[in-house]
Length: 88
Image (cartoon, rainbow, N blue to C red; front, side, top):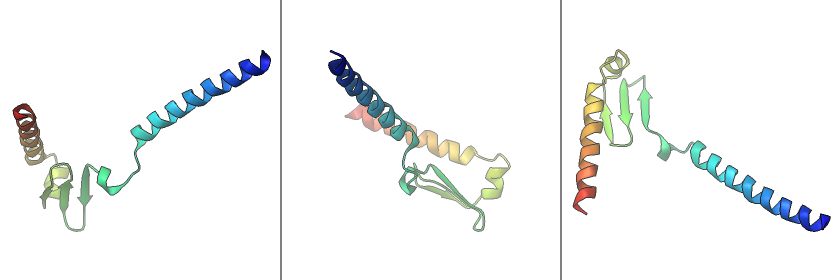
């Protein structure tokens, strides 16, 4: 019985550990370029939002709080995606 208990315990522990590892892997990601949200390029004064393919050459303005153009583009992209989803 002790051996059976140990085998069942190990199987349960292994399943739980793999589920935790999978959850962690999904949350952390790979760090690949495709997972990037936004890139700030200081030498070129460029900001690129990779989710909506928006590139602005106004990095100084963005760093001083002028993010309205990016936020508006994100809002429009979100509304467009919702409309496309609704039509399907």
